[in-house]
Length: 376
Image (cartoon, rainbow, N blue to C red; front, side, top):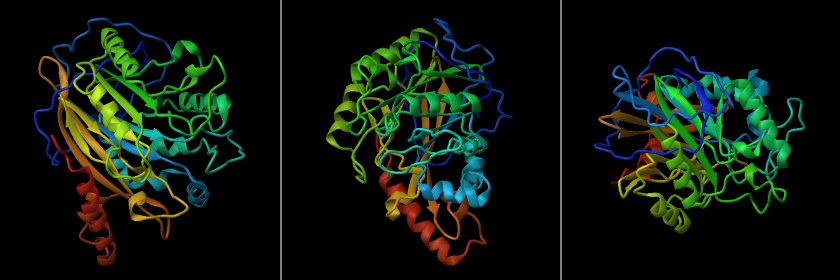
């Protein structure tokens, strides 16, 4: 969780370098959150970490938060969304910064609520996101325009009210394409987000700035501008890929190759496929191609869309910030007796776990680790 302030600034840059990659680290817990959100731009050119700055920072990133009707029906039975997320709260809240992907636009508080194909979901889901320890989310996806500009405005207003950062959508043209900045223990971290498209929907003429689309040249320019404005770490979220496909598709690979090697980008996080995709290092840049679903309940539940991948990324400072290590953290969505998000590593460490459930969890864990298969 953020220990500092969050704000928007002019577009930001990443730094890239990984010296080791093993799935064996513990998160750093460093107190309780003190962040606040602001739409005020900041320009802090040439800033470098102070002598007393931390030597490492941990990020936990998660997959799609996709509120199907069954999710909000479960929340009604539970009296809120926090119980569904509770299984991952220790990992998420223990990180210095935690980011998720909010896939769908938010409805008015009293509804009406809608599921697939044109989502408009209860804004109360943000209570669960916040309670779990997430500091913000990427918010641009193929569903961003499902409820038009009003849905974007509601989503931004609700996230601002919760004190959650958001990247990829804008309520004003002057905010378009700008990153959200998190100040984490004195270190400025920029978050940019983009999507491949909007299911055939288009923003109103002249208002293309409402949602950011993938364009490698623009992404690199935004990252570079963010670096010049003071960002010490830059993270890019991309909503891309082919649904239910575990390997990156041709567009993902082309875009990854176009972004890879940028001195301004530290880490790329992928969303959209609803299944886990690999973690790869390309020309020195680390890509988590797809984290699957964090919390969802598809009409046709299958193992692949119940599995997810969180990652714990350790950034280290040695003259500049770079990725030192990425730890895969497999997850699973239990559907009965209640919908619950499961941290598979923690669950499998419980000696009291029911044998049948242990077998299910172990199989899911093994599959996720196979799909993630870190490669450098």
